[in-house]
Length: 178
Image (cartoon, rainbow, N blue to C red; front, top):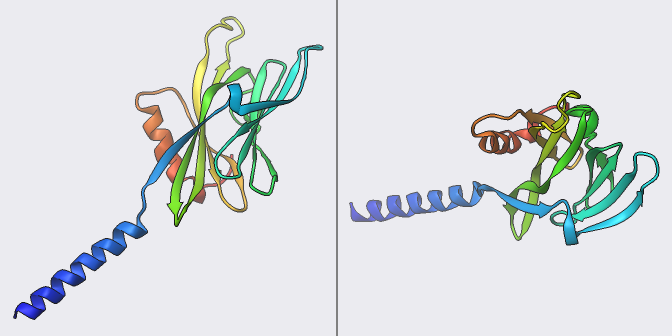
């Protein structure tokens, strides 16, 4: 009877090992949307002014941060440098806007490589022209797949908004674009 116990224990240990390897957790990696990790590509002070800068992402992904008429948005560059505009000024709000200071990448380890699954950015919008100093702070979730990078969810201000945004990001790959 003891050999059966050894076989059963070994089988249980192996199944737990394979399960933990197959179910690597999804974690977060943060990158800056301003400062030394971003390079100004173009800018002008004329008219309302405009700006385009490239910020480091993860792996070979980059983020283009753009501003025009006091509104900001992001375009994601995939490793092949293909552009995926998120058009935050139309998918979230057309009000005066600014991005938060960092991007949160939801990632999963695949072998020795970290694969991004989704991107979360804070998007602050002045939606009331009579109170331009009052901002609404959204969390914008975008999926990252081999075929698409696009906004899937917009989290309005609420208790535990960060946790909700991460949960939505972890499911974003199966969602439609906004």
